[in-house]
Image (cartoon, rainbow, N blue to C red; front, side, top):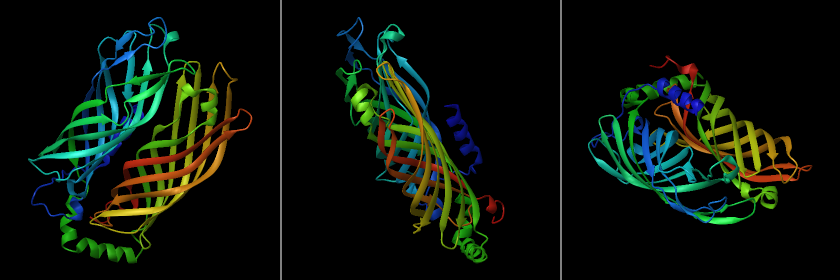
Length: 426
């Protein structure tokens, strides 16, 4: 958590904070296409009834507490206020109710997208629809550690609807969220199953401050000076530059483990993780291609009763991003990635002998996304990338462990710096 907040503060302070405003008479220029948003979200999820399924209170009806959360938001508004992509990080979480012999349900870091039929603008209220992805954690608790149930991890979508109003440089939001799946199977021991149904609704409100890094350059673009300078520098190769990238990623792990299914079904699957991604690369202006070396590292852990399983992934790749279009500063790209990966797996259980192993392998995949590029002179831009690596297999013949996953890395808000351009083209 501390690492995530530190990176968020870095993103905040390196941004040039000139507020951008969406207004009815604002031209749809490339310098008003997108903006950065930082803020807070408060949400509340009502409690729900459930039946105790183990220990001395088995079969007794209980009530899970209400859950109140405060989250830090890093977001980006695109398409002149018609779309908003954001990551929300839990900061403070409180349960309101009787916590004795109860159940806990929570969500992790959330990645979301919202669509506005009517664009955001000053002194106006705008409705939206959205979709978010995160992990849910459910666990039944007892009076002591020996009666604590399994921690059920799963990947769940949530459907959103709400209202956003802008006053000055601030966005005020009211949000209603509905779980895409609120009924699931919960293992009362290593093999016995009981159904759980939770309250699917969450209500919240948010306050975000808008920031901009490009509006000051709009005048020189309209006059033609910026493009003329870019053409001149491009011919001399002076727009080629080293690049550094930094951002949060949500990692979707879609697949199954035959070992877990056969030996420890209560463990479930490794489904969603999060990481801070670093990138080192070089941009070639003339072909409009970015070479990038992304570094990713995260740990996924699941446990149930007497079993605990941990997978740590370290990955470094080489990817080539081809920018093939430019729509008012919205510059999509696509390209291949070759990723060298190290997986360290550990498993502890009373049922089978504990084991650990390490595996190195090469994987290939596809990267796609877009840059927000008002002009080609910018030393700081925002990037969104989605990385897909199919059929990543982790296996160990000695223990019999095997897991096959499609890995999807989603990075909605990534800061990309071109240090070679600092202070040269103002």
